[in-house]
Length: 117
Length: 114
Image 1: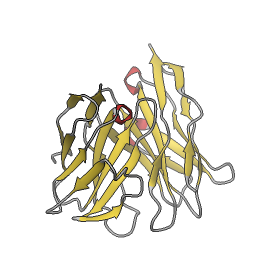
Image 2: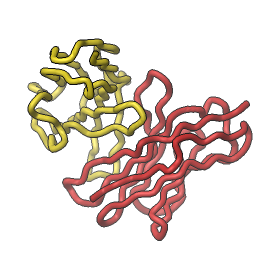
Image 3: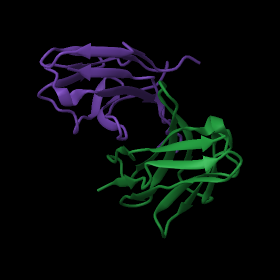
Image 4: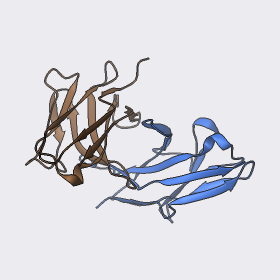
């Protein structure tokens, strides 16, 4: 079974520039998450999709961050303009919870490490 | 509000000794609890989960975790540590209610000494 694919693996940009990350979840997984992991901290949920609809984006800084999952499969996370504090690893995860939450288990990609200079 | 705490930034254990990585949580209602492991340059991998039932949960790579409701803890354990267990471990919790999110702790670095 192929895992969650993310690209690019690394990205270095200057502040105020824009950047985009791509995620391809495991085939058949309806739920997709974007997490931000700052060095020394645990992953923080940015946005959760169920198919192509947004379930939760309460922690997404909407003035600069945007995400879409147009066909309910691949997803793109964009930052425009980037700030120094956006330097982090951006993780994509997917899951297929099945009935209720008892089967809930997140599958993570390797992440995109963003450095904003 | 949901929260999860991992009080130790790093745990050092000699190979062959038992290991414990601590986790405490706070949620409304019954918790769903998880442990994930992160190896260098790789994404997080699921280790085990507690949903309901037996308080001792067994997971991947010989790890287990004990749910203690009165102490609101979910410590990760292994009877005999391997050098290959060295990694970053994250505890996570989700509350009972439909809109509750999965919240991760800050992580504990486990270092197994050969």
